[in-house]
Length: 324
Image (cartoon, rainbow, N blue to C red; front, top):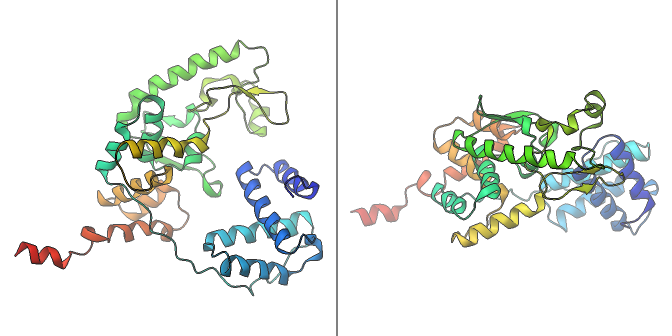
């Protein structure tokens, strides 16, 4: 199924329409699972009832979260509407996922300090930005040099989750390290420009046509470039892509272990910690919502639940007993 011409055609259809590779990969996964669930029958032979039975299967048998079930539905809606030209109507007779969202793992500020103490150089800067600006992992690796505004103390995040743009705070303490880091990127760019086959950094098609010199300009380089040059898939273009996001969690987990932190720590743990610590410091929930780029404040309210746990909300009766 992975080399299926049908799935390949869906991938190409989405690439032409500028869907991210992450979204394409997710949609193909759920479409493939849908086909396998129905004994490899072609989706054109299946009906809305088959879609509903698959979605019910995800909720009942696989116990997926509501957001995961919604993603699967979006993939199938895309399949029928844009690939098979047969939009599905009135899909609703399926079991909705009721699995509750987990409370996020949050580090204390002391634990964040211990984590950072295990890192140095670029890795420390990366983890500092994940925590200090509340960025998602993919948002961080997609940052360009021009997105760093040291005068206004902000990062410009383009095409975050849901294709939204936002401004995220920048800790002034990181400015010296960022300036040194950008100088390193500039030297790397000068080396790359000496190569005959170097085609500059990847740019969205419309911008590449409008600003043909931009791929070779410092401002458009990735803030955290890959250590190696590589050819853009399917093209003869030699480029320097961004830092491999998949390796970030390995770096963070290793630092957590070395720092004696027993919690399960990932890049998203740092984002959770950023939000929780902002609320602890007195920031209002709307501000935190804007910083995180949440479309709905209800998503942000999960952090208020974290703050209500333990000493942040309810005093243990044991404390009253031992204090007397």
